Length: 78
Image 1 (cartoon, one colour):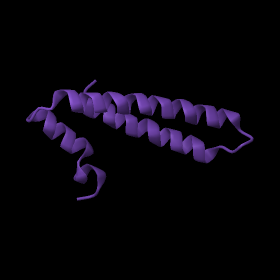
Image 2: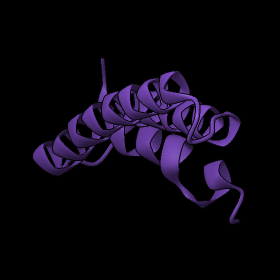
Image 3: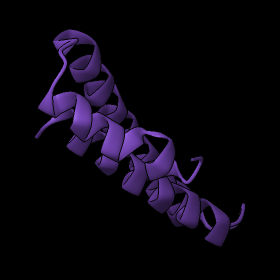
């Protein structure tokens, strides 16, 4: 899995965690457990994405992939 792919997976798992967190309440420990597990998976993917971005430090196709995944246009900022 590439760095940009890890980044996208982190976003997906973070959204899953947020959905489960919002669906649950203090009387529903299962929702909290699923939200926590999804957040942990998201964190793992985010760490791997960060490591890939920092380790490579190259220009070219990978830079284009990162920009397409996490750049302003991908986020809707530009």
